[in-house]
Image (cartoon, rainbow, N blue to C red):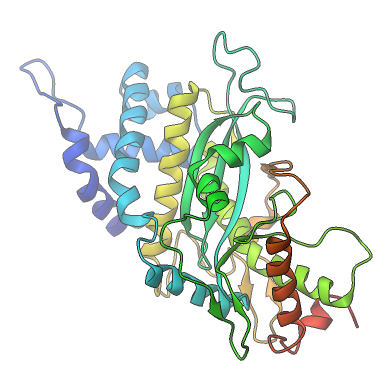
Length: 360
């Protein structure tokens, strides 16, 4: 983060950070700038409260209050500015243009995935947060756009809840299942084709197949057309993989076992997602980037080869979710996927897809 970005962020948060912080004849209140610096240091490093107390020369209890309050303010202020759900079909259409231009996947409005965030077991919680991976966690569900920023995040579900329950209980899952999501555009024809198909989200094999959620074809012995579809879908899915990878690389508190109660841990996760979006959007179009410099994330070369980002070289793996829905799907959902599959092997084909899908 540059000094200019920090000053702008402080300007956005200052009023709420300093609200009701009174000074007395005996002491001055901790300034908004210092509060923000303490919180950012904690989020970026994951260091413990004792180290922060010594570094900033404030009490450990003050550090605890400051981090909780500042994370809450970051979410309240930044979420409407940098992570507002698109409110019109035109805004969704712009997102879809990004996926088609960058990743050759038309009518795609987001890549969806979820991760387990490790937390310290809260007192008397029993197995509430104990997941099938063997540790305590809360779940982060997110949708990313073609530029590796988050369109939507939902955090705080119990780790013990089945992955299918996590998806069906979050607001995004409910909206996608009921097909009432936030002013999605009506189905439109694909480029160079008369196929009229809906706008969709792309996910991995953990997600259920719906008319507005596409997942890969299962199995090893697939036809060439299905292999091409799976390859094209995997390209688009890289967006959410990169968003999570950059997030965990920059906000290293997410790499640790967060030693807060689940409510406060949830605020930490949401604050990190907002700061990720703030810095990614702030660097758009700039030559010099500090948060996500050139080659840090996956990038496309001139021959359509994907150069993997440096974040992938770090020895850290977030635990993915398991199956989020049943294998069975409606005929309408299967027809949508089959139509995309046929399109990618016909009028929507690109010259290099067979070579990249290891078909020739």
